[in-house]
Image 1 (cartoon, rainbow, N blue to C red):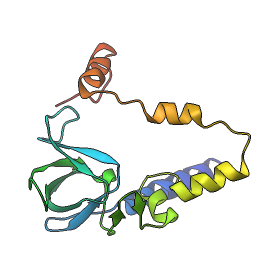
Image 2 (image 1 turned 90 degrees about the horizontal axis):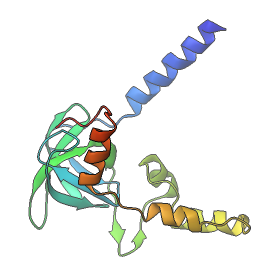
Image 3 (image 1 turned 30 degrees about the horizontal axis):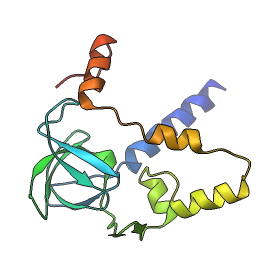
Length: 160
């Protein structure tokens, strides 16, 4: 029994290592989050230098652990560090509020439900109330409040 559990854990860890997308200098990548802060360094509370938006095309400048230094290809041409979990090599094309990416691609990119999938789920579960979910999704916590929370709670992860 223990061998099976250990084998299953090893297999899961191996899959997660290989599932992580690898980036290298010069790669073109796209933002998978609604917005993501571009930081001056790799630390959680490094200064935010700019923000990147969903489907925005960026160029990889360097990689350090799970952080990727990127540069915008349009507008300000700002550069900064972003977690690799907010990036993909797969081209994402956003047209207004309509996104031309499959539900599976969005789920794999950590986006959760697409609008179509959510509407289908709501239609098949008409008795469910999504107001609480919408209210929680609308909450925005500032970096200063987050830093205070981590500091006051003596939590790990607040390094610069």
